[in-house]
Amino acid sequence: MKSNSYFKPFIILILILLQNLQVNSQINDYNYSVKNRWSIKASIANYKTAFFSQGIIEISDNFIDIQNRKMVNFKVETNYGINKFVEIGFYAGFQHYEWIKDLENFLSPTKSFAPLFGVSANFHILPFLVKSKNCRWDLYLTTKYGGCYLPHKEIDQPDFLYGKYRHEYGLGLGIGYYFKNIIGFFAEGSVGQYYYFKNHASIAYQSGNYLEFKDFSDSNFSFRIGMATKF
Image: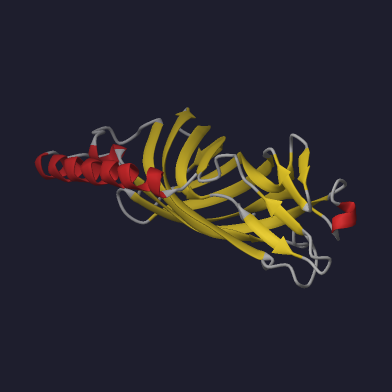
């Protein structure tokens, strides 16, 4: 599924929202702010990997999957408020995935973990709407760029088309709620490139056979849930 179908309406929505917030900020005085605030978040999501969750169909020398398996993507993110409504931060974590040494072991992949790292920026909406100095809710737009480094490529051969570094990026909307205004839960939905293993990629090998990765899952959308604390 192409990410362009998500990006256009999402960006239009963001522009309309920013315009409304700008108008409101010119006629109202608000006290709520995230400036000088630290937040730490731990979250999980399911990212597609290179191998199959529902069996294999063999057609001639090609292998076609039914659906790529999804495995855990875990991140810990730290953010700091640089002004009333903007946070910047970085994250680290791991991606659980599978790899094989050669096609002979195609049905028995080895599990591994790849380290994640990246940067993020959050644009908070509630400072434009809340007059109290304290608020248990978070509502924000988020953008992220980062990647992972695979200890082993999904097919760990020197002539494999893709390298060990893979990147991700996208835009999203997040919401959170804090108990006693300190610790709580949050969820984020984002659109962009949220996968590390190429879809619809055909790789040629010395034998002349082809291994075809066909992705029928939604790889351009990411949904994360987790816990957060702020201070």
